[in-house]
Image (cartoon, rainbow, N blue to C red; front, side, top):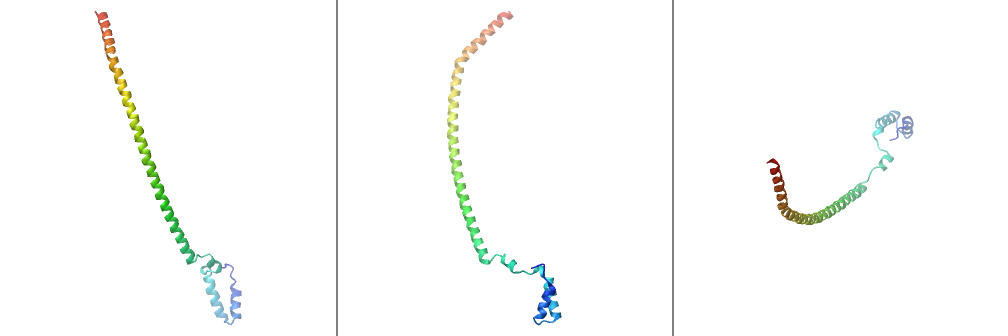
Length: 134
């Protein structure tokens, strides 16, 4: 509604069209009282039509369906990638464990060869200490 509503001009216009002064004043007074609550043409032009609302609703539903489908596909792709990564990790881990087992066996073999020499060295040191103590 136009905040610059001219009540005097409106009352004179109503009187000019055949209403009594009291009728014109009553109409203008009532109209002025609800001035801020009455929609005018410019207000109505900004409203959405039922057809526009239906189109928007359908477009929104389609957007949601598209989003849901894309999301499902992305989740499926991620699952596939994760499964592939897990398989690769498992293979790599098994290979590393195999290498460690070989290294452990090699170290064990080397220790078995060196243990008698270490025992002999310890025994030799013991003999030297024994001679020094006697």
